[in-house]
Image (cartoon, rainbow, N blue to C red; front, side):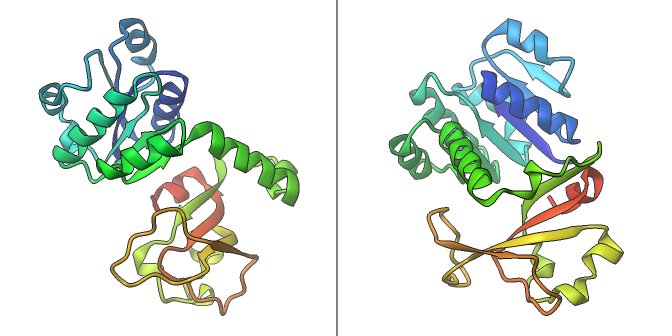
Length: 228
């Protein structure tokens, strides 16, 4: 089971924490606001009220043993930077931090953030894409327990063609689209998120999956979680 610390319970952090918990993750929710801690305590595995900018408090609550830390503080950027640094120092493998603009994103990446979320900008881009391309999710209502999700290609799928993987018949997953880097990266390079990508809709069986591909998959939440 994935263990995630969500640090900061504003609207964004609260939504992330409750949705991760609903999807099966073991969530530690943290905020200084006791009222928010009480509200979310019924929805997550653990809710703690303390100042997450204090590294010793993060360590005492086992944040360093988490698989992911989400730094969801939006009203105090200095705290967001400190918490991001502390999480990386404690050894959290993946730290995702919220930014309000590109300047904040640049600072968070410099102090160790592996992924930066700009909620308003990201939602604006998604809305524009859905409107322009008339995305399938505008027209298809999936039954409860099923989702359309964009997930990174599993390492053991890289180099295999889709026919050999038998996604639908064996894994009960329907691949709608591949989001692929236009220019391949060096083997030891890590994507920054600024690379140009191309979309390969309804790929055929001969298509070979590449490192850093993002796969738009429809399947049950249980089967999709196996790939996360």
